[in-house]
Amino acid sequence: IALYDFEAQDEDELSIREADKIWVLNPSPNEEWWRCQITDAATGAQRTGVVPASYLE
Image (tube, rainbow, N blue to C red; front, side):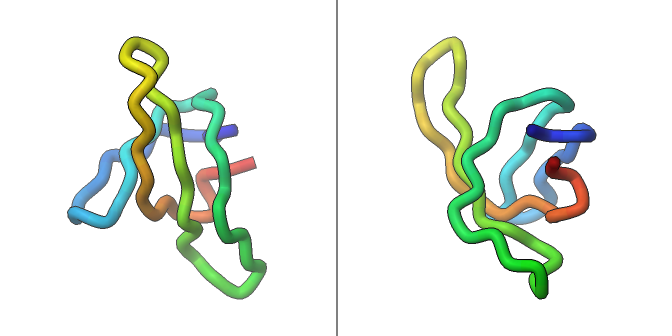
């Protein structure tokens, strides 16, 4: 679950909104960024990118 909004700044980042349900693909306690996937509720399209780990619960 996203704790905060995050607006992607780079091509490999994933924009998220607070309360989004997110699949974490590679959680690691030593990494500041986690690769995640989210499904767009309107289109069903899946997006993948990195998100700051501190933004996720």
